[in-house]
Length: 452
Ligand code: TYD
Ligand code: MG
Image (cartoon, rainbow, N blue to C red; front, side, top):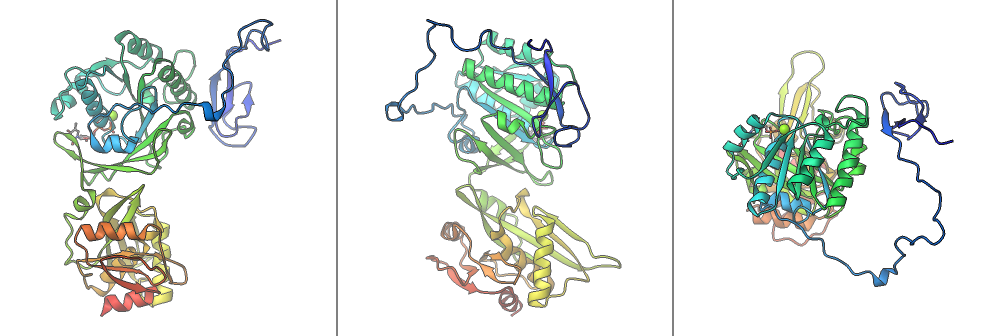
């Protein structure tokens, strides 16, 4: 006897099914992960009836014709680049980011540009009233006049309107304010968010409409509620940046139609977001290389090297435990590097408050930046600036040893392009480069050279 229930309660972590909502999953013990899910209708008869037309037949791989994915280029260079060349029709793209970072601005600009090419768009917002969106539109360099707006939170209505207006691109701002009437529970809860995303995915595939979905990210960095959303959609882009800086970084963390980890850099101006064509130069533009505590490194962001400045400041602390404040890098990584400098190079930080900052709102995710962090720390402690034309490329191990890093030559080439002359690298790497290479084996050696 098939169940008559129209929904089940499923744990979004382990998938365990519960007959009713519970605060704690009995399967895996996780709290607050159980969400309502509609039951998919049971297929009428199991198996295929005799004489019915079979579905799609299997195909030999060799016989498959490769179709090139068509794309709509928005003309916002960095956005197209991160997507892998433009918006793919029928794809579902999630744009996540903290509130206020510029997601709505980015997607409104995209909609305007696509509309400008005659690609019909619909911008559905449950976040702001149409009048508010109009105010934003009036600030932008783009002409948003033809973008159709819909102030709506009901998913069914949004999809219906997208079909009626024949939109080829649908923006839903945001997934947390959208809800389906088929599920109980307030908008933004895990079940609603997942179901709405799954329905939008089906709509995108069935109608070849590209759906761009806004998702708010909490300070902790997860897309509010459901990390599971990432599995549903085709592409996940994160829009990041430091609100104290005007630079914004768009990062692809999942992409079924392009490569991941590619980043695009924008600047938030008074007239919306402007793609930054030469991010390395932009990030170094406000650098004061005569100040102690500043060192430059090159990060690999996807396939592109990106030069960033690391600033460190050590200041004698008052009483109690000295402070360690890291912006743009993991504070545990900073603690490790400080401990290595203390133990392996004899530098004394235990009575110093230490502040480290990565400029431009970039986050250091690779250990390749270690050597530059260490150089900035030595420089501030010695109160001696690092030579302006020098770059640091190396990973630091717990023994104080300087290790080789990946893609060293590409990073060196970018540094050369931006006028750098000298590079500190691991003595174990043998790159070919036009730069003057300074091989270092150990952090103590680096510290000695920077003190001299
Ligand atoms: P918004 O797109 O509303 O962010 P989100 O949708 O991610 O919450 O943009 C928020 C900020 O951007 C807001 O503080 C104002 C600023 N802004 C500009 O500086 N210039 C502009 O042209 C626009 C439209 C916004
Ligand atoms: Mg918004």
